[in-house]
Image (cartoon, rainbow, N blue to C red):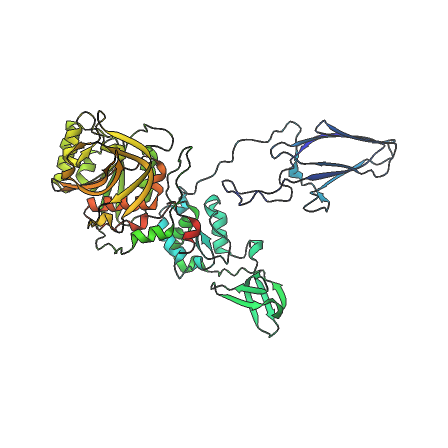
Length: 544
C-alpha cells in the first residue's frame, strides 16, 4: 500500500479567527506531534521528503513519532509505504496527533485535514462580506437601531458591549459586523441555541439555601452573579455550596416579537453594519482618537432641534488629486452620503464637480469637497442659489478660485490663489475668536488637528465673520469662517486635507454645525451624526 497525501495542520486545537477580526494577544506557535502506528512487515514513512522513518521485519504494532511546528499556510506532505509478508497477514495503519504543551492526549485527524498530493492552500486573503447592502436590512436605520440597543425594552446594553459602550456581563458584540445575518438573527431569536462557553449560565446554591441564577465570575474571594436584568449580586465564595450549569441563556426570549419587524430590522442594522467612516488613511499614523470627555464638552448645552423640516443636502465632490488618504473626495462623498442618510427628514444626493440644475433649484445646502474652480457659469449659478437663501459649505481645496480667485472671494470671503497662497501640513493649533457668540463655535476655545492650513489668500478678511485662526508666518491666519451674502449663507473650513480629519468627532461637530447653519437650521440639528464611525478612545467611551 502506498499512500500519498498532504496534511493541513493549521490551528489544530484553536478556533479559526473570524475573517477581518484580530486577537488581542499573540498565541504561541503550536507544536504538533504526529504518531504513526503501522502493522506491516515493512514500513517506510516520509514527512516533507526530509524526515524518513522505517521499520522492517515485524508484523506487530510499531509506533513512530514526528514532531514539528507547521507553517500556517503550508500543508505537510506525507508518503506512507507498507508491505505485508504474506497474503494472510493484515495490513493496518493508524495516525493520530497531539499538541504537546496544550494537550498531550492523542486525537484522530479529521478527514478535512487530508488533502490531495497536488492541492495548494489558497494564499488569497479571505474576502470580508459587507452586510451594508443585505436585502434583509433594507430600510433599517443604524441610528434608530442604536437607540434600540441602548433602550429599555431591548435592554441589550445592560449585558453587552459594542464599539466600546455597554455592559460587560455578556459577550462583547463588536465583532458582529464580521458575521453573517442568519447566525446573528438566530442568536437573537433563539438565545440558547449556541451559548458562548465563557458565558454559560449557572445555578448557584448558597449555604443559606438561597439560589442565584445567572453568569458567574470570580474576583478574589468573591463570587459575582449577573442576572437577566444586568443586576449583579456579590457573595463570599465560602458561602457557595454548589454550582449547576444551565442549558439556558440568561438572554430573554421573545425579543423579536416585542420589537416588531421594523424595530428588529433597525437593531440588526446597528449590530451588523459598521457606521460610516473614511475607509483609508494612508501610510501615516493618524492622530490619537478623541476622548468622550472632549466630545461631551463641545456638545454640552445642545438643544433638540426646534425644526425638523425636510432638508435636501447635495454633496459635491470630484476626482482625487492627491495621494492615499489625502483629498479623498470620492470616498468622502460615499461615506457622508451614508452618514446623512441616518438623519431624519434629510434627503441627500451627490454631484460630480458641480450640482445639477435640479439640485440648484431644490437644495437647502450644497457642500463642496473637491478641487475648486471659478467660472462665469458657476458665478451665475452661485449668485442665484444664494439669492434664494441657499447655504454653501466649502471644505479645504474647494476654496481654490482657479483663474478668478478674486471673483470667488467676493462670494465666500477668502479664496485660494495658486500664484500667491501658501500651505503647510502638520499640527494645527486652532484658536477660536474670544467672546464669539456664533453658534458654530459654541464650547470651542482651542483645538488641535493634524491637517493642512492655507493662508495668504485673496480677499478682504474684514468681510468675513471669523470663527478660528491658526498661526502661520507669525500671524493668526483664518481657518474657519462664515459669510452672509445675497440672502444666503456660507461656511468655510480650511482643514480637511487628510481622510482621518473627517472621522474626528470635534471636526465633525464643526462641519455639521456649519452645514446646519447654512441651511438656516439650529446648529444641533445633526448632533446624532457626530459619533457614528468617529474615532473615539474606546476606554473612555465605555465609561459613558
